[in-house]
Image 1 (cartoon, rainbow, N blue to C red):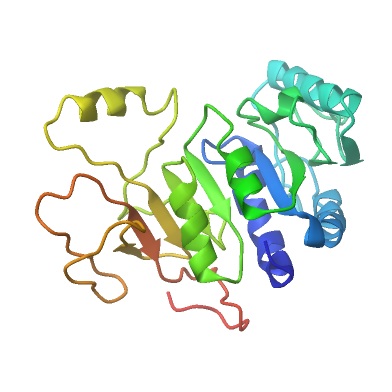
Image 2: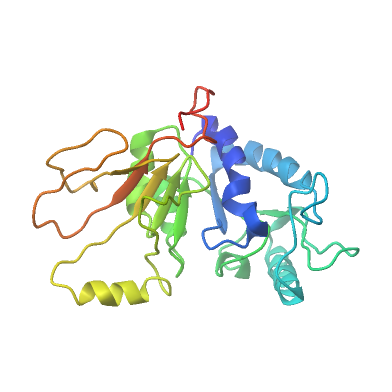
Length: 271
């Protein structure tokens, strides 16, 4: 959301979108970029994706392997074609290399319209869809306009804004300034259908209900209250926040640094 967040967002994008060829349950599907930084961000991201070498995973220099089968190749081709027919701009990639097997080029589309098929499903492939927005409320509304709610990502230099947006996202996981929000010490799960149907039913059967969103800021788990709640005792980084008896909901946030995370000053964060 801020001009200074362009570089961290570019660094995190391959992890959020392209790891395992985009075939990850928490891979980013739609990338919402504020108008003021969109042109520069899209130009830099296009260069980065165009430079990714596709091929056998053990070959020198290769960073992107195959998708699962020919059905996936055909599905990705169809999603890209439908988006471009609806007015999206194809900036790089968009097809399967003819000399390889079930591979698909790292693909970036800009100005993807809301009615494109690409914006609805889990893409499960190396295709990134850029949508632009003007205001924070617009971004949150569009981000939540999906039946999938496993993971979301926020990039901003304002930590208050980051947590404010994270609290509004209808997802089970939120990564702040990082592309891998899952953590072994924190809950993992979604908050929209179909991922949360069973969990929602289980919660509804309890007398005390609890909803959890795990928000990760480059690493360690620490619980943080939602805006309407106040903890009895807030612990230091890496520990827990203790809640009053009788609380019926909470948001679990992960705060800290992972070895591959660089704070805004540029120095590596502590492991």
